[in-house]
Image (cartoon, rainbow, N blue to C red):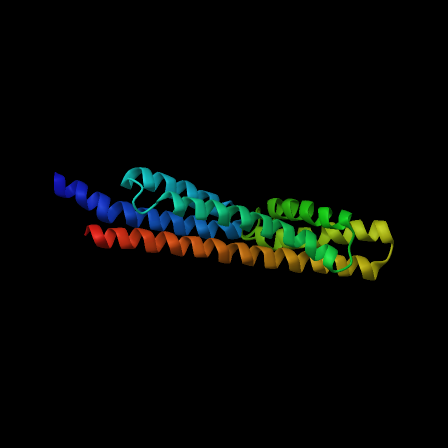
Length: 181
């Protein structure tokens, strides 16, 4: 019985944790808060294994990455609109449009529609506000393009940052499993 528990803790639990953490990371593409799910999984795994692999610093790194990643992801649409000549209102409209676009887009392509939805939502939000505000199609289009580019870069940055956290989780879990095995 003791060897069964040992196999469960040394082989099955780490493998299951890593699979679930990888799935959580992949869900970021669908606008699901995958980094936060990874942190929750790491906390649960830490409770199971006595916080050897999932020490406090690993969890704090995850929280820092999640907070920065969220700010970068959503802020890039705002600053993209502003950087391309849009107003503060266009920046906020890009943020709101991103959220609406992600929600509406998620209904298409098995959820993958959230990606173009969030980018097009940022574009449309900034474009509409600037078109109404300035009544100049060129400036409105430029702000919309900036918002869309910013939103796409923000998502890519968040995926990269969360991928680094996922790599940290892999290293910690596999190292501890190697030491225990």
